[in-house]
Image (tube, rainbow, N blue to C red; front, side, top):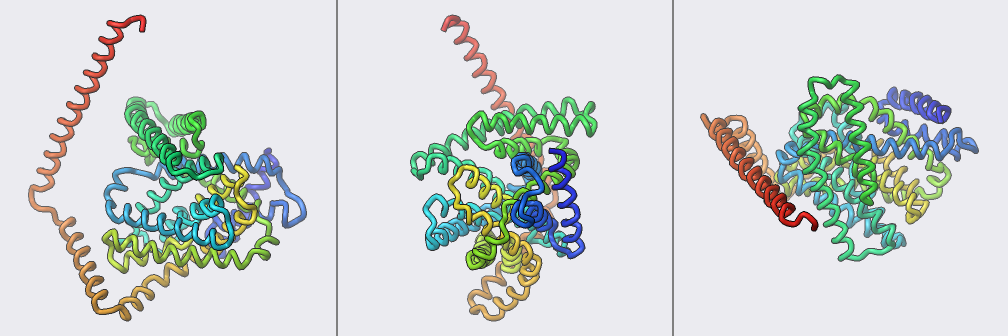
Length: 454
């Protein structure tokens, strides 16, 4: 196993360094490294595939745990309508498009559904890196784009659970699926409520004794414990990792944990992407190149259209909406995870995996160039749009500008009044909840006293 890890790390390091010099995303370097050490290029694998698969599964857990650490409910609520409408439009539109394309090329309903799930999620890692490298991190559209990506990550985790349930039963029944969704929703609520009631308080109590070493060990222990809990409950371990990351994101040490986990996340993410690359047969890419081009066209066209429409309907300006849509033109880690899930369950056609990975590589490579085209495309659209549409675009620009000015200049005394109201509401709420909990506890105790043998 040490030998395998050495081969993975040294190959990934050298190839990713080369990609960095070429100013390409290092994720592509990891995938290419996987192709090189895999069984198809040199006639035999340099590493044991079973060991790599085990490391890759661990990588998935750490990647989702770190994604959960970046998920903060207050930031999500701050984006409001843009995040909700934008994410739902992209996910719903891309799933319908993906399912339709799958049906047209002859896939059965289950494989078409898996394909739809792979196509509806942009890569958070690649989008944010591309935005940062393009010097756009301070742009107005980034806040809404980040919130949409967070919602997509949450939906992707839930989607994995639903797809695995459908794949295991090999059938799609509305009532049964609804029942599964309700069970999952109740389970998530219980986990979040119990976790947020207990863990942040625990972290706050022991904060004076937490150095970096103790904090990261405690965090990893909680993560793995939640992974085991999720598996015992019949769900994916990745779901448990994401949930625990989300719970720890609400603690006072969230940013510190995120910083400490960053190097470990990078290591295991590299292993995961290398394991993805090992499953690619370069010969199959030549064989399936028409389908790869179709997938690339569907991803780019669909993400631009649904991303732009969703953000526009959510209240963004047309310029910001198009910037968001043009930055989402790729698929990434969750697409690979869903594809791997379908492969491990034995329900996914073998040809789909290399097609999806190849499409991801191509769209990731094109992302920076497509992002640069957003402003020229907006200018072209505005100049050639009907007068009525131009009026709506101008009106939206004025509305957003006015909203920003009103937020930047609060009324005198408004913040004090708002704070006072929120404090009073919080006190009343907490008092009522505490009273109800005490009443229920006393009632339960009295019933136990009356019926000691029941």
